Each structure stands twice: as C-alpha cells, then as structure tokens.
Amino acid sequence: MEGNTAWLLTSSALVLLMTPGLAFFYGGMVRSKSVLNIMMLCFGAMGLIGVLWVIYGYGIAYGDTIGTLFGWSSDAIGLNGLMDPAEDPTGTTVDVAFQAMFAIITVALIAGAIADRVRFGPWLLFAGLWATLVYFPVAHWVWGGGWIAEMGALDFAGGTAVHINSGAAALGLALVIGKRKGWPREPMKPHNLPFVMLGAGLLWFGWFGFNAGSAYAADGVAGIAFVNTLTATCAAMLGWLLLERIRDGHATSLGAASGIVAGLVAITPACAFVDTWGALAIGFIAGVVCALAVSLKYKLGYDDSLDVVGIHMIGGLIGTATIALFATSTVDPGAGTEEAFTEGLLYGGGLDLVVPQLAGAFGVMIYSCAVAIILGLAIQKTIGFRVSEDVETSGIDESEHAEVAYEFGALRGGRTGGSVTAPATKKLEDSKS
Image 1 (cartoon, rainbow, N blue to C red):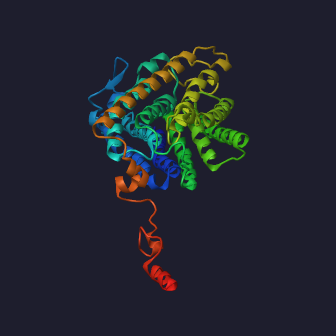
Image 2 (image 1 turned 30 degrees about the horizontal axis):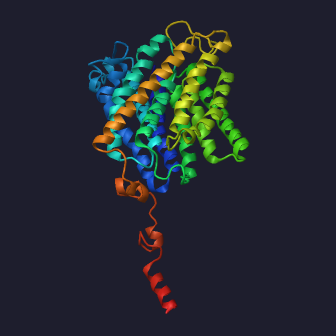
Image 3 (image 1 turned 135 degrees about the vertical axis):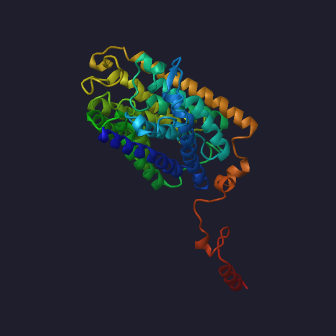
C-alpha cells in the first residue's frame, strides 16, 4: 500500500508540473506583448482552483451522488474528517491531491482560446464559476458515480472530463469574447518557439503521472498506461509532421509540439484499454486529424487563439470515440467498470461501446459550451471581460500586470522607451553639426 501511495503522490506532483508546462507552451505561442498575461491565466487557475477544490470541489465531484448529477458529502467540505490518517486508511487525502491537479489544468487549458485579449480579474471570476458549475459536476458524472459512469462509458484519465470539457468551454468563450484585433488579416506568429518546445516537453513528462497515475497503483495497469502514452504521442507527432510536410512542404517545431499534445490528449481516455496497435492508431489518427482541425477556425470564423478546440476538444473526441473500436480485454480484463469489460468493435465486441462513449462525450461538450457562453456573456455585460482596443494594441501585459516579459532597458543604456542612449544621441547631433 505504501508503494501505491508513493506512486500516487509522485503522479500528483507530475500532474501539477503540467500547468507550468502549459504556461510555457501557451506563452511561447502568443506575441511578446501578452506572454505574461497568458502565463498568469494559467498560474491564476492553479491558485484559485486549488482553494476551491479543498473547500467544496472534491465534495461535489466525489461525494455521495445526488440524482447521478453531482455529489455531496459533509466530510469532504473543507476536507473535514479526511485529514486524519488514522481515520483514513484508504488514503482518500492522497486522492484529493491527485484529483486537484486535474481540476487545475482543465481550467487552465481554456485560457489558450482567449489569449491576447482578456482581463485577469474577470478571468478568475469565470474560472471559479465554470469550475463550480461544470468541472466539479462533470468529474462526478465520469468518475464519481454519475450518469456517464452508469452508462458504462470508459474514460481512464480524462478524455471527456478534462479535454472535451475544456475544449468545448474554450469554443464557447472564444465566441463570446470575439476575435483578436486584426485577426485573421494580420500574422500573429509565436514569439518564442523554444518556449513552446519546452512547454510541450514538460507536458509530456507530467502526462505520465496524468495517465499512469490514474491506475491508482504501481502495477501492470500503470505500466500499460505509461507505454501507451509514450507510443501514441510519438505516433501523433509523426502524423502531424507528415501532414505538414505533404501540405506545406516543411515539418515545423510548432507542428512537432502540437502533435505531441494532440497525441497526449487522444490517448488519455484510452491508455489502459487498448494494446500497442490501438495506441499507435489512436495517436496517428489524432496527429493528422488535429492538424487539419486547427484550420477550421479560419473557415468557420471563430478565433481560438492557441488551438484549444482543434487539439483538446477534437483530440478528446477522437480518443473517447476510438475506445469503441480499439478497446480490448487482453490488455486489462479488470479495467473500466465493475461489470464485465466490453470489447471494442475491432476486437469482436460489436457496437456496445459506441452509444455510451458518444453520449458521454457530446453530453459534456454541449453542457460545457453552453455554460461557458452564459458565464462569458454575463461577465462581459457586467464588469467587462475583454480589454480595450488600445490596451490590446499596446500590450496587455503592462496594462494588466504592470510588467513586461522582456526588459531591454539595460541594453539601451537604462532607457526603457528609447532606441539609443543620451550620449549616443549627443554624438550623433555633434556629427551633424
């Protein structure tokens, strides 16, 4: 038991690292004048959701089910009664820690869709309300005994609860906030691709805790999830790069990083339910389809700044739906629900998993998107969500946080706004005279 506890605590730390990794991933993709803001949206989610989770979030997600819609337990409110190891021999407090990290990163993921144009305070208000009304109940639906679990839908580590959920919210919020000034006419290229690659690497590293930790034991199931996470992610990166090479003539670092994340997203719900061939197929499909899906925003006209919809919502749908094709009991006969494990279509199981997988996925997608739209509109109409055009043009970092990411004053003789130092200016004037 001590070994399992140690693995789950280690996995919790790995999953927490994913949110700073996400901040670097997002931060590198925005323009330099808004890098601090997008990173603060991610770090802000860490602080706020961490507090809400221990006060009431865990109770809603994992308390005694009420109508299969949400949970409630007085012992879980403020973790009352859960912090005494003598009274908690099963290690519930360790589960509180592990699942807190899922709640944090799910909210942080949404921020990528509205990068470059939102205020920090209203974002925190949205994050707290959305987590309360959407993430905590949806976690109960999927893992806490709610209606999705009752249908027999399989989601090992968060394809529905995390990725479809956050991607759908990102779509709804992007529609409310509107397009960035100048998009899509003006190029808005990533300002720091090494940041993007660093962020992708940190995400990949932390994701082993995300997926393998969801086995809740240091056992063979964790090993299967670990290997499948590696396998699918590698295949997805290659799939994305292959599409880029065929379509654009170049394989890019941004494409490699994006392919990595797409593969991680897609294998998340399926990582302990499929064999190696299933993982390879899911990863490659996700890499190609997500690379195509990120272009939909140009055709449909919604400004998803950092492709949260194309990677997380679409990738989550791919991983959740393909479980119905590739699930096999030869990997882990005891995985999934308390009932007999259901084989996927390609392994002789028929269509039994199709309805539960799709019903859960689309149910969460519709609910999350609708609530995000309602909350976004309410905040925008009251306290204002989006920054002014002047702030968006000049730089959101300085306006919202009184800081800039890159201070070049020391290189310019101490003047932050000028292009030459005062002695240099005098020398130039003397030479002209």
